[in-house]
Length: 527
Image (cartoon, rainbow, N blue to C red; front, side):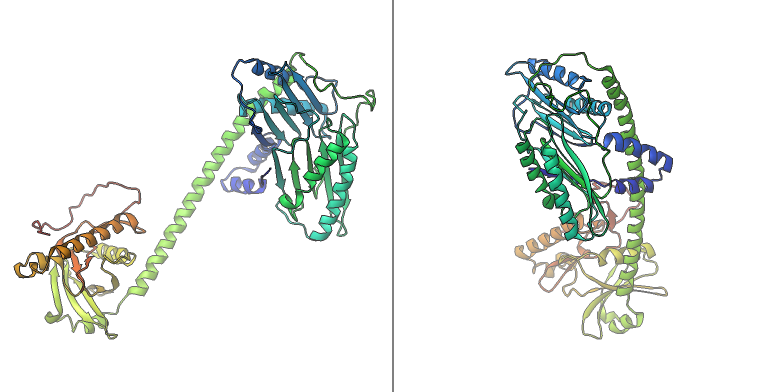
């Protein structure tokens, strides 16, 4: 199984620059980040489910001894370490492999850093593997020498696409095939090869392949075959990609990413074998490796803290810009709503027959309500706010914008408004059966409300309130709910009206304080 991973340093760079970080600090951060933090490609613990070990156990002691001395053998200058320590069932086997072009000192430093990270990231795990750009380190309680391991794996890819895909893929296939043969035929110290080829459009492809040297030529060849076959899956048509497995790995780019291969020590004959795969080792830990770990343990946390600060600054600025955009959008929406709902005063005056008393439906605290008929034949109810009603421009605008955004069968629907001179009018859908107080406080009309009708009205009011409080795009508290503000349609279904005192609260707000007493005192209803 190959785990897909993609990283784009340019995206991080742009975000940090947007946060206002200086170019000098940015350069310092990226030098350290790329050389240390981002060099770790992956870490996987207990991938074969072999189990855990307990602290201070024999396996724990053997593991610490083996990992602390793995790279201390300065006679090894070819970047491959395969050692064991202890006796079964507490025997620990480990493999350390550096990229073929990495210098011995740099290789040992990378393995020491990998050792420190691996024991921290995979505590009490009998098996683990970690990949860095320059090295790989793995250990297990089972036999891992001379075994082809395809899991766990990962691949990475360049975000840029190739221009001439067919030609690019053909050149890449030839390059990988040639490199595979060279690497597989390597000796027990190194199975590594690099080369480049130029396509017809003068684009050069640089390639690298490598196997752990404990594999035979056939094993290395098979491992690289499988890895190369993953290229269409992971990196199709991309100008760069990497496929990494425990036993082998490949990489290609359109830029040179490797150095010249380090020449092997001429004093070591080419036929000399690698150290015995099961040799016990117990030399003293190398102090330079410990120094590297100490330095890194100081530098890396510092970089992480600085990056977190930069990220916070970026997110804070982004949130401020986002809020500004949202507010501008809300203003534009309100303007559009206002323009689409605005009625001409003469239109309403004609519809209500100049607000004649015969069309008057009732009188409220903020003004009278009139019945009207538009030229289209549509019946409307017009709320004409009195000039001394106490509902000023703020309340008027509040009711228009709030009710216009609400859509529910148990809320009265706002059709429009008129704001002309001293006239402030609200145009609603016409609800023929007047308001609830007309029924429950009139001895004769009250008889029409049987239990079925009362239950229907109660449920409708509850549904309308639930919508206002929980289900609408805005959370709204009516604050003036009373029988006179519950209108009944021709089917005696209730519709909540009069949002002049409504208050908008936050979606997750459960309480609020107000310095203004609102609503209307009324006797208890008998509903």
